Image (cartoon, rainbow, N blue to C red):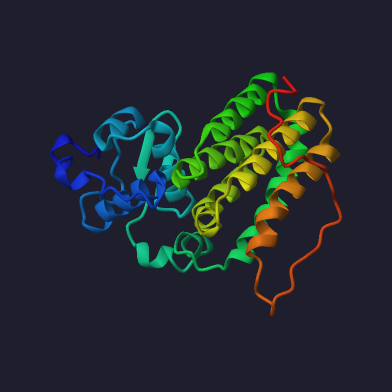
Length: 265
């Protein structure tokens, strides 16, 4: 049955928390409604535009939260009908891989190593599958990242996440995209613990540009190498567990530490 308006009130207001990404707060709120009994198995959620309005959030953030819950088997989307609550036994969900990911039960090295495998493959696929519109969108998203201030850590994280999520979508591999989305919250934790600096920000933006450069030329080897170089920076910074030796991937794409955006357009 659909969730009617009486269920929407103060209990749906998100608690402001600048330290956590918005999709994570939305996911938590929806979980709370399920645990509290407001949402029951079989309930149809309001449409995305209506739910976004009720929660006062952007549809992109709402969709990310719903996709996370879908991966955990908590909600499901029925083609042409909308989103439905699939299960309310959240304790059982935590026993599965998706639940463990949601509960941050893997260390940073595990997450980063899987991310490298997924995103480098996505870069190769995007090089042969992405259209001009998708490449233009990647360039637009990187400009947002370039404009982000180092002091605004949350904006930097969200802008970077938007870029990488768009690149993974451009691979046009639905399973790969769903696997990547399952990693996103844990990856945000990794980025939040990294020390931001103008030098790192400039280098990251330049590396985004270089990835786009290879994608526009449909060079799947170059795109994969550029993505590997980009991700290894974060991996090298955070992989500090001496009992678990990190991998050394033999690839190199030279980039300048000074901003180069604008030169390729």
